[in-house]
Length: 390
Image (cartoon, rainbow, N blue to C red; front, side):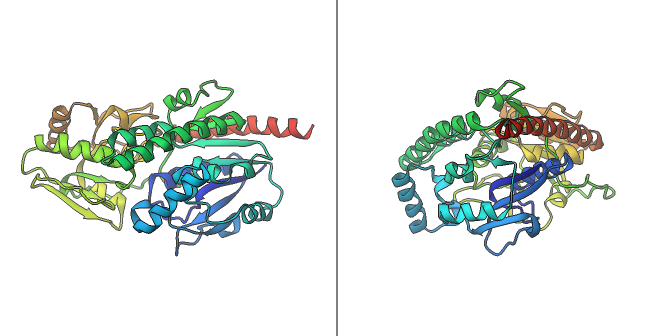
């Protein structure tokens, strides 16, 4: 079976974000199941595709709102309003329908599409309607947009996110309805997308990287807690704000916290132990040097890749209940609480008594369940393909 995996940004091998980590895990699982997978989408400027022989590149584009000029942002908003597309999808309308059709045809005969999230599928929706498809819902995007609207700091942002939510709800309903099968990354997302039947959907448990983390000897602890993420993504920003504003004030002054990743403007903390360190060369080494990992999701849907990485590495953690969505197994060294004071006390206790565990069993169980879900979805797609040819 030859599948065209349609995604906004094609893998470049860096695995710099949760989205890219999830994509790599899903593509690898499709190939383990015997599918031939060709990826189609854009590259980041200056970052070529990691697997050029199995990738069709539509062009290079930077879709990050935080990196865009005010003029570019206004152009995107105007284009979205005129076209009726979402803000996220209109960014990808940098090529014409004719260009995309030619790119699809260049991949050769394909049996079906894997529509990876709503961005590219929404930008060129009609072009992916001629073959059976699987829809991969990384998040329930319209619910995330609603939460973003509620947390927006200006009326303009609030109105923009509300518009996104309205359009995304209709688009997600349409993509799910047309898809022969839907993959989500969390169990609750199946019901939120109205595809809770096992005949219509399955959850994809994920793993981090192609290989299991290898032991690197005793850990060298140089801070009490470490956080790393794409903080310009609004659901992540909401969680970070909650942590800095609600949890951190209850930590003792000497508690050392390092926050890595690109930081949007306006993020600060009065706590003397908080340090914003920007980009780090080795994300895994960065978190391994911390006594405990705070898992701080309070918004969004889908699964938290940082939670999966923490559990694979066997590191102590304190997690909100939202951080555990899509994950069935909680290791013994993970404390769960949504109360800010209790969260702070649990962090201090974990940092004072560091207890690592073996994360290999967690990874094995994730891969086993992931492969089973992928096989189930491909069987459904194969049946749809046979019906279309009959």
